[in-house]
Image (cartoon, rainbow, N blue to C red; front, side, top):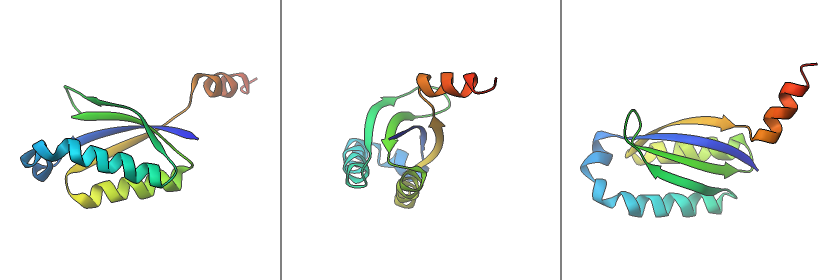
Length: 97
């Protein structure tokens, strides 16, 4: 499984309906699960982003599809970072020679 960090901000619509946000999170968690992925952690944050999630998906295409489905809801905008775990980081650095 590939790990991703998803940075999220509410849109104006999402902020207006913020009380429904936990239900939307539950629906997103189920949706990603149905696609073969999972939420590893989720945070409400202060600062540049409203929420941050660490998720796993089978591949980039699955996460791209999931991100597009989230965007289509009109409640949040996302930025996604592909995350390499420490062991992969060490392998990548070691491969430099």
